[in-house]
Length: 399
Ligand SMILES: *Cc1c(COP(=O)(O)O)cnc(C)c1O
Image (cartoon, rainbow, N blue to C red; front, side):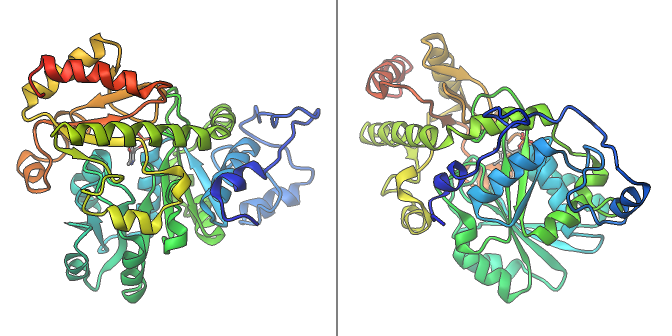
């Protein structure tokens, strides 16, 4: 079997029931059983080959789950109605009252808010640390710690987690290493570095058309079955299920992920290099100036590059806002949160996706007011895009 994650998706072949080249969509919330006994067996957890009810799973959800499990190299996967549905399900499955989590402090704003504001009410406490400082990670671990949580490439600061080193720490202290790989599908395969459980928001690059919300958990078959357990599974019981129609459409979009990621990465590398040459403070894992450039290189599947996300510092929030409005007026991209769209998207994280993080903590972690996060699009001619961006940068006085 090829090690290439793109090849693993290509190898999967599903046909529709009439020989359609796309699998049929399961248009049912419930499923018949041929015998009453097989229904009661299924409720007792022996669901082999049987579908029960679509909150548990559906044929369409299984197709997409299998494809994502194959891409990420895990035994199994479970698709959810959103990335947050995957994250909250995993963390509440792994942690009960009295347990403790060690998490990177630069993570998606929603995940941060969940761990900071919501789980303490369930007596699950979290220590937020600088994930690139392994000493402070280890110091934060205590006897109640169950989970080590990070993003491969973090939102929005683009810090890179040394997953191999973190997995050694996790093993040493008997923790589950949970990694959110939303920013780096195909480019980094965290299981090869020892990640135990992997999460994606499918809403972003994997679906790639900004038309739906979705998520996935990839893990061992045992853990996925726990999440789906009818009596005790967090995903099953909290109901963060994906709809079959969405599974089917995301599976079709997944087919073009390899060529999209290559183009996002190529365009972002070009722009990051130009911005840096122009003297603008630029953060991109593909730049030699990125503090974790070598760590990224040690983990990545080279052909998929450094991803589509970069940040620049416009100096102040006013300048950032002025620049973003101008770039939108010039049709360079959209002033919008989210990422992975064909068109460039930009936002100021401090006042948008990371606004859940208090201002003083934002400062502490290096999240400046003028920070603009870009999700670079699939532009066919990135050089002319750069020329257009340069005009805007000049007009607002950043250049
Ligand atoms: C968007 C995002 C999430 C949340 O996903 P939703 O699909 O919006 O629920 C989680 N992690 C990261 C890194 C994200 O960018």
